[in-house]
Length: 62
Image (cartoon, rainbow, N blue to C red):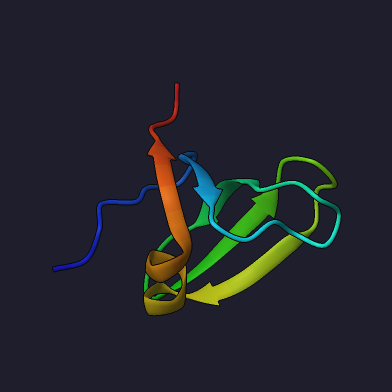
C-alpha cells in the first residue's frame, strides 16, 4: 500500500541533495513526484517507488 504523501508536505530523505540539503517539499504527487529542495530550490522528478525507499521522515503541510 502506498504511503500517504500530499502536495505541500515536507520530506526528509536519507541521501542529501548535491547542494547538501536533505529537506524537500512535494510540488506534485501521483505515480511520479516532483519535489523541490528546500536549500537551493532545484526541482527533481522521481517515481513513487524510488521516493518511498528514500524517505526518512514526512512532515504534513502546516
